[in-house]
Length: 409
Ligand code: ADP
Image 1 (cartoon, rainbow, N blue to C red):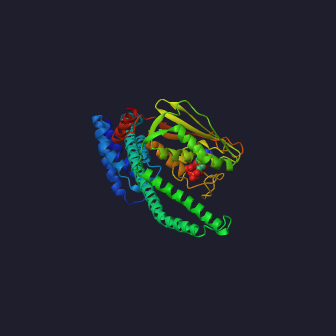
Image 2 (image 1 turned 45 degrees about the vertical axis):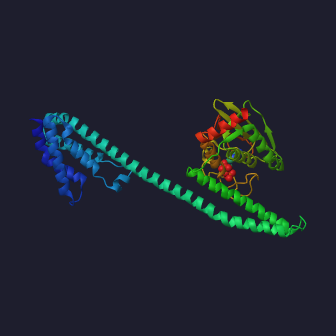
């Protein structure tokens, strides 16, 4: 008996069995039988022509008939349906046909069924991949929207806070004028000093918020000037020595080859970046600790390192601290002072530092063996700054070049 004839012979019982296996109730059975019949017609064609490709359009149609709910399921598969169809073919063939004929039918159907299985699995995977990637796109859009609204909030809040803060500062200054004659130890003078400290800190936080929103929105403008890293370091140490001494800490500077080279950078912004790293070194090092500033010259760059003997940072947290609000669990959750041990802060200092350095074409990273308040492994921050012979902006470069020529002549 020819294979197509065998297939025709088992068609009736096959249809009955498969539709019962796949659907226990009566509802929807007619539609299922129609689909199975379509499959069977194509199966006959495939066997007659030796080309399983006849089944392809129907298999793709089945794989694509997925609802959003089904796509959300982890275990998405038409393969059990295929398995039932294949299994029942062999069962029915064994029951209806002679063993030899059944075997012949198996052999003829095997490539067609393998093809069906592979095609359906391939389309299911493609469908799932495109579903998951569309979900990822949605999540990405939502995250970007949230980040934008966070950044908008920071910028609006910072500007709105600035006006009342200026008022408080103004009135506090007037009050201070009024009681000028009083003794320095008078309670009112002391209270006013408290108000001043508070407004200064608040002003710093507001400025940080403004800087972070400028960086977020790519609006940070740099004013490139001749800059000398050794002078910046000396100035930095001068400014922070009192803070460190108050905490019983020492600051050592180890000069390195090339640190006196002139480069072009936004001097104030680079100083701000270095100061952030330095105040952190003081803040996250216990009283009596040691801070060392050094560096090296690399081809096209100057690298400044600020090392401390403090609490250190776990390797898995080392990239997080450069993201906004990326402060770690060990620090105080409120802003209790700029250099108090583990004083905490809004978690904006390092993101700003990174933004400033990246705007210059440099970068910053940290090395630390881990976080340990007993063993104090310390941390070393590396600040990489490009060496520039002239400012990147052509107009400014021309200006500085002619100024130099005038000086030479
Ligand atoms: P913060 O305002 O919290 O100091 P930063 O952005 O300056 O914000 O720092 C982010 C976090 O990185 C800090 O909260 C702290 O957990 C960690 N950190 C920064 N510098 C050091 C350091 N030198 N040693 C240990 N941890 C540090």
